[in-house]
Length: 398
Image (cartoon, rainbow, N blue to C red; front, side, top):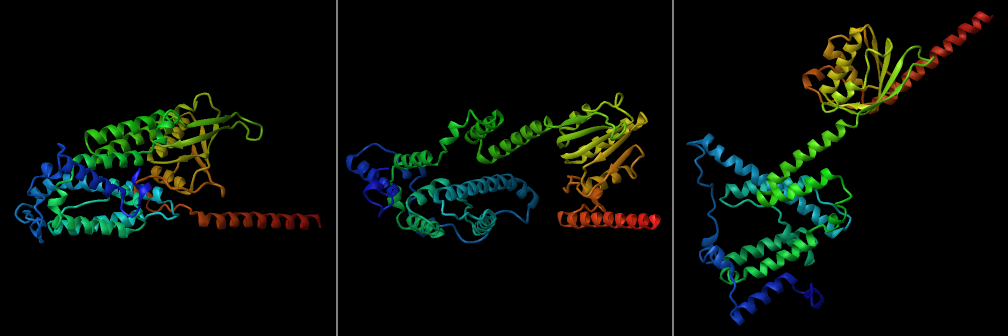
């Protein structure tokens, strides 16, 4: 924090490491160094420390399945951790630079995968973007990918040429730098809004942080995703409701249920509890204009509701369904029974349903680009019919 105010010609982190290392050597302070942790063999330097080029000594041909069973769990874990950390690092760089440009996540993932494959086939070690090094790089003035390439080249030269010198760096100097990195990386503003966000989100944040420390980042991401998905499904399952309009003179004895909220596997129970088949009139209308049919369970719930009313000699009129919902309901039944009536309209919404592709065969939903021509055709047909009616009236008058 102080050194950048004095000079920016040399990165402050590099100056800090040099000052602490010199102080330890000059004053004879008891401090553990990198060579104490990794061993003298690691920091002996020279070309002998480089891995031999060539395919790794893995028994692919003699025992392929056994080898794959050993390597696959570790490979999947490392790939997941690497992708997550690289994407988080990319997000951090976009936030720190704030130059109006955004990194390409697909490009980063594909490039990292190709690089790790090439590294593994040449007896090297896979890697990913590192939040700590990137933070130090950006704070030192880095603005392009050239900074990362330069860091890699200098690190390689340091291992080959200056390894004995690097081994004398105290661990305390690196720990201090990482504390500064953590302090500047952590989003302290999240603590201020912790009491304002939903409790489920706060629990997910705490759970992911705990699992990251106890296990690893890959497991934490999986656990957080599962808990978030379950929490979202629970909240959405309670959002389904109906606005009931009693029978009116306009619709005779019909009663209208205007559904609000998504209809999916988690809300089918609440959907069924909304209706009163015994007390309702002979015809009811279920309007889905403010709702959305999401999956197969929702389609089955609609069919099951119609069957309940059909068993009592009553009819269910369905409105506001998308075109593919209509086709899928007909496909599930083979042919819609007389008590389940779908009333299509040009203003019906257009969306897809999470359904088995086998049931989708032959069901072509109306696309948004086709909706306007269909509506125009319906309007033109109506106008043409009206014109013909007026002509007939004039003939009758004459």
